[in-house]
Length: 292
Image (cartoon, rainbow, N blue to C red):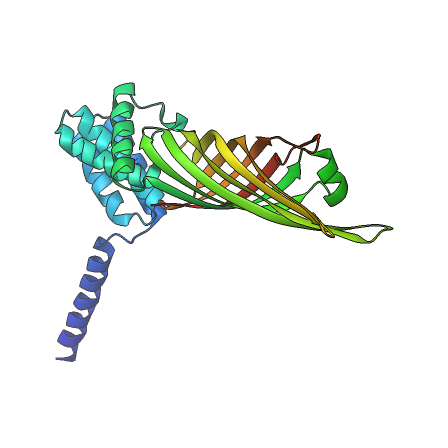
């Protein structure tokens, strides 16, 4: 009797181990190994059925969005090569776009027609979701007005909020607002100078994906500049129109969030009491962005 119980217990242990081993453990390394095997099966042996089976296992094992995107991309490519349903391929590429974004230079090994379908699917994904971009930036501002820099120094912290809306393809309409205050005490006469400048801008932007995470952003537009300066009982307050330009990079670390960094220039000029004032300047900044 005891012998039978021992045998039964041993069989149960072996069955449990076999069953637990049959279930793939979720792991990106395992998923990537299966992905390479699938590429080999399709590229060398031209066994698409075996490749799709391996990709299915890889999809089960994958943990991160990036690895899942790579697996879905290979699945879409194989099904496209098999001339399967265009709707199915497009749906797979839409899921790829949600994880990897549009095709970049590292995807040049895929045929141009396939990359064009992927790019279109990515644009449709952008068109239906996350057409807005909201950025909170902190800039180091350097005025181009020599009188200003002589009185207040060359570097000022300039917080900025920026909102962009994708209207078509890579083109955006954007608006931004930034403002900073300044103060200084003149030596000898001990007179306090203080004031503020603000910039409200509206313009057109263009984006270009350098790879699945990095995006180039160029923007230009018109802006309304307000400034005020007060010294003792005297006060100067004025506003003028100017131009704003910016070039930057966005690095996406999730489908919704990204880091943004760039350099900008504000160009404005107004004449006060026969003196030319230039309330613009250069700005270098970085911050966090959200797509929604």
